[in-house]
Amino acid sequence: MQQEVVLAMLAKEPSHGYELRTRLAQALGPVAEGISEAQMYVTLARLEKGGFVSRLDAPAQRSDRKVYCLTPAGQERVTDWMSDMSWPRPDLAEFHMKLIAAAAGALADPISLIDAQRRDLLRRLREVGLAVMEEEKDSDAALLLEGIVLRLQADLRWLHACEIVWTKRSTRK
Amino acid sequence: MNDSPTVLVHAKGLRKDYGSGDGLVRALDMVDLDVNRGEAVAVMGPSGCGKSTLLHLIGGLDRPSAGQLTVAGQRVDELSERALAYLRRDEIGFVFQTFQLMDELTAQENVELPALVAGFPPNEARARATALLEQVGLADRARHLPSMLSGGQRQRVAIARALVNDPGIVLADEPTGNLDSASAFDVLSLLADLHAKGLTLVIVTHDERIATAADRLISMRDGAFVDETRLTGGSRGDLSTFAEWEHLG
Image 1 (cartoon, each protein chain N blue to C red):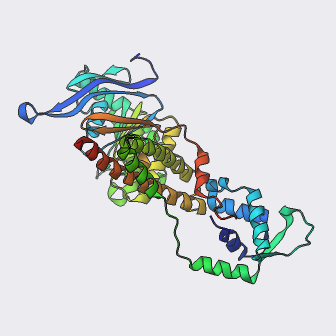
Image 2: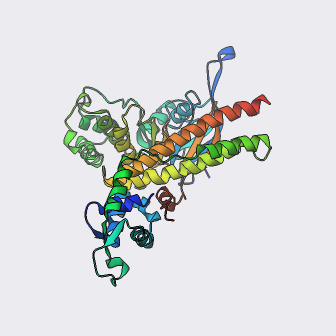
Image 3: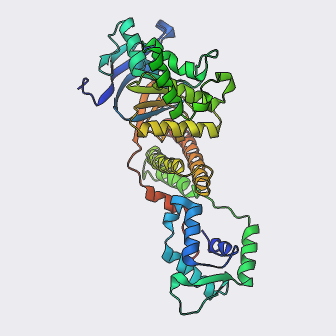
């Protein structure tokens, strides 16, 4: 995730780091476990240094009491981010090349690589699938986890396509 | 070993042939399977791989051509027709892709029926059905006919019906195959919840999401098991990798 996420949360109202981290945790559910409170303060400090946020309180406050608001430059960055169409891409090309290199250099059996990857994705799908059921229906966190489930399912379908083609290639030899 | 109470289904060298001579189709070939009490096992594979045949054999709807099959301590391959019918009634709950509810009976009556057939007094059958409809979230639909219910609701009635005689094991054949994704999610949540409470399940499915709610996933091809993956023991920590600050510098 990008710094813009933090900036965009400040668009609602000036907040301190702890509050932002709480709102993030609510929106992300178990996915937020990857983002520590300390990281939030580091991000805010860097944004302040870059002139995208400024402090509303006395400068001597403890880091969890610092209240930040957006500067005009920060506001502009949020607007740009909102209209940015970039989309996170899973790097399928890397695994694809792993299979090709494995077969070409006799480094490993592509089918075994696919099998191992499939098991790993299945276990991940299980974890995320169970996590969705623990969240309140239609909550922010459930919606995000649903997206992760669908992505994993798409990856599993692609692995299935890989398995079919690589099985054909290995039997042809 | 077969009589051990922890092993509910024990199959050894299971085979099922249809037809004969040139028309012989080997639907199942030398399958070994153990399902422990309280375990959920998912079976996946392309159409015609033998997964439904396996389910039908475990459920006593069909007989193996060869091999041993023990379900709830009884040798299915050796039972009389009558004993097999009792085993189906008392130990097995079925959930089908097409629900298989009786159209002219209400939800409540559909759930009661197997209990009445099993010889429970009407008030006991009613009490069981009422409690189960409550459990599947359909207490307010008890008097509805299946035609007045959505697909997801019908399947939940079918799950209640499968549970009414308190079976040792529930066998589900594509339980979400006819449902939209929202209804499929409700049925999945229900099955996962029942499993968490100790229900033993064998689920045949095309849907990885359903399959991965099980403890173990078996992949079949051409009548045989080709892969088995234990799904439990993964780490929740993996979830956090879906959100990390990438551009802190």
